[in-house]
Image 1 (cartoon, rainbow, N blue to C red):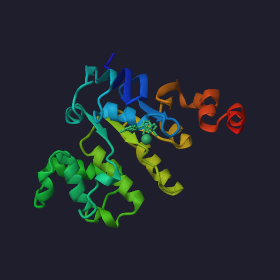
Image 2: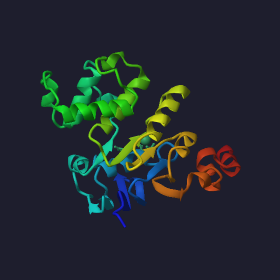
Image 3: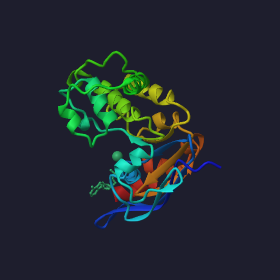
Length: 256
Ligand SMILES: Nc1ncnc2c1ncn2[C@@H]1O[C@H](COP(=O)(O)OP(=O)(O)O)[C@@H](O)[C@H]1O
Ligand SMILES: [Mg+2]
């Protein structure tokens, strides 16, 4: 059996008294696509940060590709093949699409490249940039200035920037948030068309979008895993309905 792409064993992240992530265990097989869904505040983004290394867990173990990575830096995890979307705030609005892609390829730590505008890529680099832009349906937009892109295109560029280093485990945190229905459809098509050997964890608040894109779903609630199941079982699950919609019991309790 190949090593799992990602394994979490009892991972908790505490912020003071709050357990934002509370004893989460999950295993993502090589090539698996997993959605992590759940209401706002469920701990999804914090869990991502524990996987990418932006936050160290207070308890538990993180394994990437079968090797312990609990204390590894984000840079080390990136070298082991973890890629995640950058938030739009990390795009450089005054630079072009091509320049932002070059920065993403160099690694975010290499701020010096920012000042070296004449930096050129070798054939490998050019090919990686072209492939990532094509995957994110941004081909032909190289020369556009980021501040002139639509919001949807900026989100596509984030995806391209996450793809350019050819990750083996891709973490997407609400890639369709704030988009129109048409733009959401485009993001869904982009995600669906990514290589099947890429392992993926997709955080998405919108259940309809998430369920159509993944092999398996983890539902989080108050920092814990509430349910893990195939997409077809999720929608009808009473526990999932309760956290998404609230039960009559809860509504009554709130009214009292
Ligand atoms: N840096 C932080 N400091 C303190 N509390 C935080 C921090 N980040 C997140 N939280 C809290 O942790 C909980 C989970 O947040 P988050 O992981 O962002 O949830 P989700 O992504 O599911 O909406 C929330 O109650 C949030 O307010
Ligand atoms: Mg979040």
